[in-house]
Image (cartoon, rainbow, N blue to C red):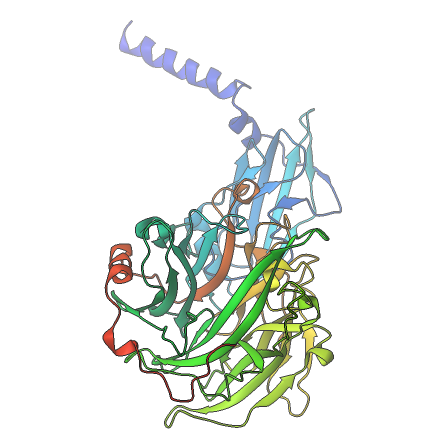
Length: 520
């Protein structure tokens, strides 16, 4: 065949291939633009509709919950070039580069998502657009959380992980497989700084080692021994002072029991709990009676934005009857919200003040978290106790700290669900709240994000996006204590493992204040 005939044959073949109807993608691209309009919005999963999204969030991939043989998706905003996606399955994957450009160009604007679905007969349905707002303010770039299974008594694999919210990258910070399957928990950051944080470790039966607090500064880690005869209980909940030197911790002994009533059969109660102040530079620990009353349970410490006030929750210690199990009557225990002045220069404590009683709140108060701008405080409220993650009635409440006298508070109705909503954390600019929610299954908690405007109004929350929009349907781990940080944690897992097995800092062994109170 000469070159002219060969060229003619190639042209004819190309024309035939172009006209062939077997290529779904081409058929979709060449299908008519007309479509029957539907007045309602389409169902999508996860539900990213009618909310407020950060301009630096990873693409919100979703699955269309409408029947169809093919789909057309158009993402539009006021500025820049929109995004057109054509696919033959309900799963919609948004190009990351185009997504970032579109959101960056439209900070403070609106995002419209138009979805069309092709019927079996080849005709199209066009649904009402899904509208969401694009915030002006970024969310902190990384989220740190603990991943674990549905723990009852024993655990197997537990780890602290970090997720880049601007991409889908998830990496381990510390997995318990690196220290004989011990327990790692209670991670806490100083002002959202990924280079200054702490976490707690406890041994397993495989290879016992001393429990302790790991303190990370930049790329190095050290273990502080925080136990002595005066304070035999290791720290649990931790809050870093804004100075980055001190940490207020709770010294809590919690126990679990089971019951047969209700959807959740597990219950956790505090036998006792006191607060203490740790100097993370020297390891010195003080636990004065003003924050460690032997007749009360003090827990969930949280510093104010300026570091001159410590919030915490308290309840009276129950007197256990010898004839009854220790947890008898735990369903009647309700915690009040307290605060106490603190002088960072002299380490002196002021007069204790009741901020909100359980009676006024209508339930037990836990997990107070003031916003970094000092304006608001978000807390959890449930029927009783302080382990809200196991109580389905737990909701988020917000309080305005700028008011005087009785501070106004209200439930965050737009963010709450009929199931557990707890473990919340503010972004450093005070515009975003991340929290754990069991709204999807009732068993596994997922991290949700809600925008908080300058007047304290929350937006409809959305789940942290994944590359696979159906990822959460089959993921059998729970997200525990999501904490926003301003960048990636860079300390290596090897360095953390080394610190766990190293001898504790000698300065931290017996430097306890004379008025430290031993738990009862």
